Length: 181
Image 1 (cartoon, rainbow, N blue to C red):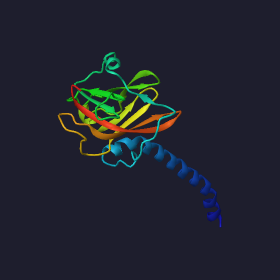
Image 2 (cartoon, helix red, strand yellow; image 1 turned 135 degrees about the vertical axis):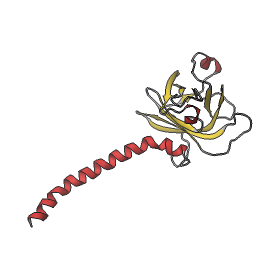
Image 3 (cartoon, rainbow, N blue to C red; image 1 turned 60 degrees about the horizontal axis):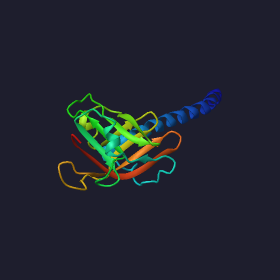
């Protein structure tokens, strides 16, 4: 009888430990969502949503000229196959320790961020995760075949923009990468 009473008193503690462990596991899974999408599991990128609360704006060539990005390999995300980008990233292609720099226009100002992983062009060619001071931007290809032709064809893709206050929003578009892009 004493054994049952002792185990019964541990039950609330065990439940709390299980609950806390589950919460920590879920928190870790949220960061892994973009890397899972890049490896072919695109379940998190199933639909686009409007970004009424927070929106990325397109950047013009003049605006981009005022913000140099280092690197010899670049990618851009745009809503149209050929159009002004919502996001651009550049990296040194053959430098495995290189992390891409990126630009997004948010709240009428251009914000610089960095890829969360190093790896040169391999780290961003099929998407990637990028972090700024106030936004997390994840890019994932939604199809393996390009939507166009040429040296740097656009691939159907989706970005997830996460902002701590407003949550997350999704934008469908195209991810185009290439040398000196």
